[in-house]
Amino acid sequence: VNGLGVVRAVDSHLHIWNGDEISFQVEPPEALKRVASVENYKMVMKENQVDAAIITQPINYKFDHSYVASVIEKNREIFRGILLANPELETKELKNEIERLYKLGFTGVRLNPSLWKSGSISDEKGQAIFEICEKLAIPVCVMAFGTGFSKELEFDLAFLLNLYPQASIIFDHFGFPRANPALPPCASLEFDDAAFERLLIFGSQKFPKNTAVKLS
Image 1 (cartoon, one colour):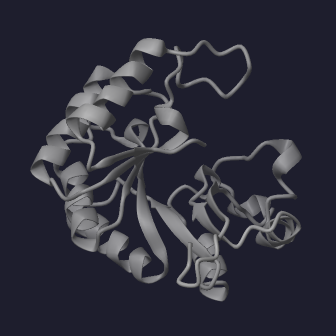
Image 2: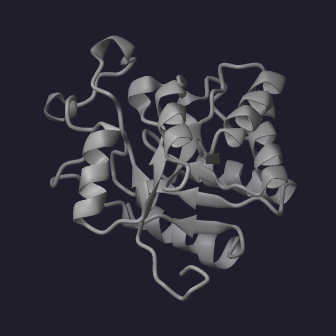
């Protein structure tokens, strides 16, 4: 709701790319290669009366944020971004990159545990992400593809939130509560009720001021 009491419709999660196969680091689905441009999306926004949107860095570009950054720069009145944290960088470089992209309109950091070679996001780099996000007052968006809300991930996140109590996290895609979180989406995937129950307890009882679950 804006200052005039008018409700704004905001798309909280989308991916875009320009269809240039040369720049893809991970191939998108064939049917979507040519249709996920910002030009197409802006037409969809208009048709559905969507006022603004948050663009999550697509895995197709991995850590190359140049396309999404250019889109935000040209459309700051309607777009913000969620960057993808790069654990391949040294800790200082990682913090500097988050701050650089923050200034370009990226107002959240996607953390994908499956990218961590150390096996634990509570390491020095994970701590650096939570430290800078707490400082900038932007959320850490947990993308638990490949891990789901495992007990190991729960332990690591609890450790990080205790270390940085003013930080906030958003679980993307319901926290991936499915029996095999590494498989692509399909109707036959089995739901992991136990993991989802732990996620709800984590957010509602253990860290209610720090946690949200995105219905995406």
